[in-house]
Length: 415
Image 1 (cartoon, rainbow, N blue to C red):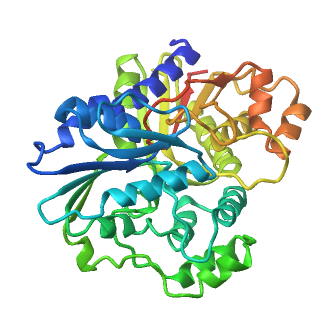
Image 2: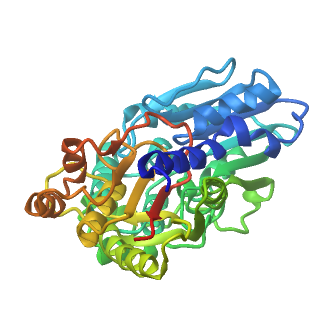
């Protein structure tokens, strides 16, 4: 039988390594174009992506915005750090400077855009009439309401001057190639970083529906902005005619690599899907049922089974604790399994940050819940990170420099 914790951590590390831009980006790069080349980007992986571009092309002109602590050394591309998940002034200033790089570009010039998860907060230029402080308030409210990422990004697009194709439109008539790392269920480029390089057919009415459905309170200026014509670029707009968007790394590739490693370690491996969504504690209850049913079907001597999944779960904030979707999933899963022997699990965000803590996620096993009342109280107040910190069950990676969404692995041993 494999040692559960090291195996689960090895599976996660393999998933992250496969999505490292230094390993994966070069194959998606064309030969360096002649003439002026400008590299821009935003996201938790963008600095690493820029580093990979310069490893292939040499020093380049440009600017990318990444999360604090995620910078990488580049020879020509400027790296700016800013706040995530709630934007800050550093991100706003850097976005303005990025847009200024596009001034004077012509048909013979080339823009390479590097977009990864986190760009929605890091690439910040509020629409007319909305201040940065008001945009920050909306971002904080969205994070607490439990809305799926695609709905959150719909609203963000209509409150921005760069999202929803507007970054690509600003670079026109230069040619643009956008390389993306997907961190959204379904790998729709329109929702990766709120789609700064691709057109969008949503309307301001769709954005208002998000506010209504999840009861998000916003300043009056936001209500007024959503009553005006939107700046989001329609998919067939001529300003997007010279922009190409390519997803070169996605959660499915990382899950497949983890499955291969699990099989090499003597386990059966099954991928449940790379686009699972839903409330973390509700998905955890379903996963617990699945694990118990699958374990019951195993016979002595059968190979252990690893169930892998990705996607992006949500948490509706009910308490004042410190938590994240992956840690909350793990805590709810441990409670639902109720000490069932032979079932272990890991859930982590591949960017190394789960919710409100510099922690990737957590590991659980049959002994995770030692005091059920304490665990239930922690879940009730969304304090999953606090609970796992006390139990020394957190997974801490530091910046992984990539982002292919959540990673979950359940190891089921025969009883």
